[in-house]
Image (tube, rainbow, N blue to C red; front, side, top):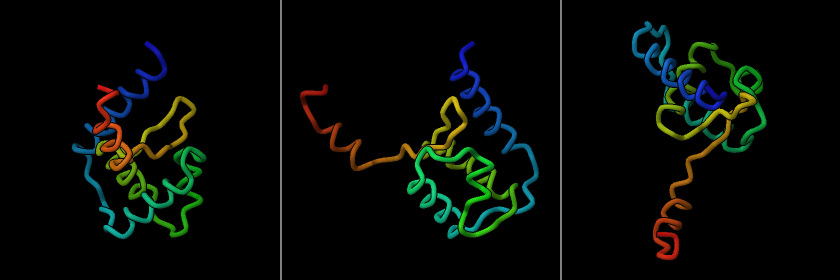
Amino acid sequence: MTQTQTLNIMGYINRYTMMLKNVLRYPRLDTILMVEEYIQKNDGEFRKKALWESLPKKMMYQTFCVIIDYLLYSGKISIDKEGKIGWIYYPTLAKKYHSRTDLR
């Protein structure tokens, strides 16, 4: 099993356990948007814990993990083999490439 496959399996396990565990604090919308914006600006620079420590607004680590799990599940971020978090959600760029006939 490759490391990428292992990370994918770990992602599925995180999503499954997120549904089963009791979450003490659910994030507010402004907190989710703040994390999204920070990840977009610092694309691929931080690992999970370093990203949490460098956020402009402090929050509980459990709340941060719920946000990261949500962003992974929704397909907005990915985690590379080094554990760095990158932004992958670019709908306008995808629409542009989807409309090109030479790529079909």
